[in-house]
Length: 251
Image (cartoon, rainbow, N blue to C red; front, side, top):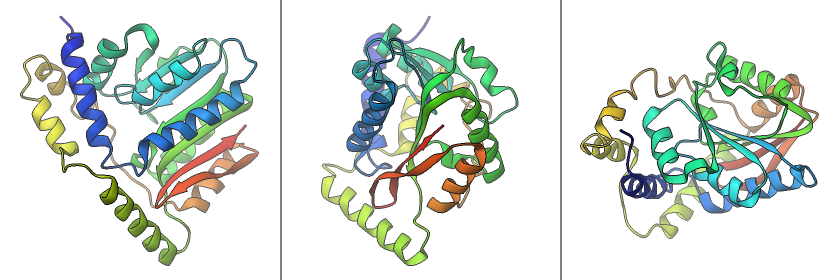
């Protein structure tokens, strides 16, 4: 028996609130990403859009609303988050469980055509530099010519001093926007484990459900170099608030 729609709605809403702690101006960043996807897919009757590290599909659902004729895949490795999204958003999205960067991870997507856009938010920083290099190359091969890869994440400016300033700006902006302390990532998962409907799925969200956090210390220019080496012709940041960037790479 799956998670009820009532339970899913409650936990997805709590997920959205706790994610505000980790993404400066999260809603504006989502809007910018949706604007980019809409720009690239204008005139295409059935765009194919992938959201990597989608969680329950908060961004993917916004993209599906913006592009009602698109096929939107929410791609994540965590069974709980995918089940919550499926119960909450229903058939609006296609949910795929796979671990980004693992050998053969693209096979699970079962794509029948090149993608028009691939997006990701606060997910790819989990990958080590060499894994990310490989993933960028794989995604370049997955996209049609003119397709776009959009990465919204914590990406440091190249200058250490400017990076310190950007981090402080981001912290101050987040503090000004905060309405209450709320729960963080760890407390969300701890609470989910106590919900009878979610507990069995939490127990499956172990080492095979969440990405190993190799992490990387790539600055903005480091990402740009990897993307160009992967085969993207046009790469650059199109939005920034503090350390939060939206990086666009066009195939």
